[in-house]
Amino acid sequence: MEDHPGTLFAVPQNDHSSAFDVATAVRRSEGGGLVAELDPGWDVGGGILNGGYLLSVAGRAAVLESPHEHPVAMSASYLRAGAGGPATLAVTPGPAGRTLAHSMVTLADDGGPLITVQATTATLTDAPSEYSRPMPEVPSPDECLDMAANAHLAAVPIQLPGLTQHVDSRLDPATAMWALGQPSEEPVLRAWVRLADGRRADPLSLLLFADVLPPTSFATGRMGWAPTVQLQVLVRAIPAPGWCLVEARASEVAGGWSDEDYRIWDSTGRLVAQSRQLARTAR
Image 1 (spheres, rainbow, N blue to C red):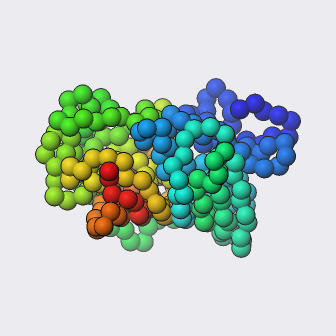
Image 2: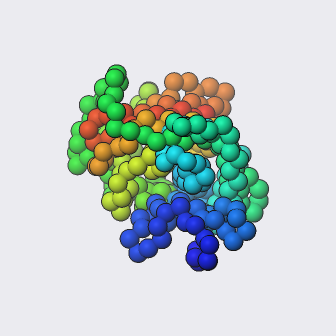
């Protein structure tokens, strides 16, 4: 995107910007509105953009128009599938105070709105956790399955989406047997994740990680696209440097609908984000 006089970028635009920062950049146009260029390389197959990626773009817009630094609660409704190209963002401010601010964000492309988001922003601190369920015991990333590097060995056909080029994912062997032709009875996936270019995780990238794993139906052998209908993300803390562990678990699959609960821990074992989504079952 070209920088015009008076244009404000939500992230620095230079040779050292990460792929995530560039792909989720939001700028103020000469007319005063917010615009973005959606990157088709962050797809989940078939040119359809990842829901967490779209939410990260909306999160940048919410922070840009807020007196606070971080997205802490995002509730997104997905209206239709999105592809790459120019997009606009409308942020409608809501109540705001010293500790948090509310807004409504609409992300649209030439075909109309893609998602609407109820956003709450605040400034996260390093306050210690008073109580948290412990992180599950999972082998180190080096002992887990790198799906991008081993897709050709899978017992079932795996089409790697563009998202895998930007997010390094290492599946916990205990929840990866579906890739070897041995599906589980339980719809649970776990993986270590990080941005592939080494960019440190932060509250904005946690919005991406909250929708980064394959559908939990993959664990039970049911493959296919499972479009997200509604996604709620809570960002609880600023993650420490290093890998994040993501666990996705479905509790009910019925009538063509599925839920997924995510919990995300940083490299120190601290819970840094949670999410819950409603999706159509894989087809």
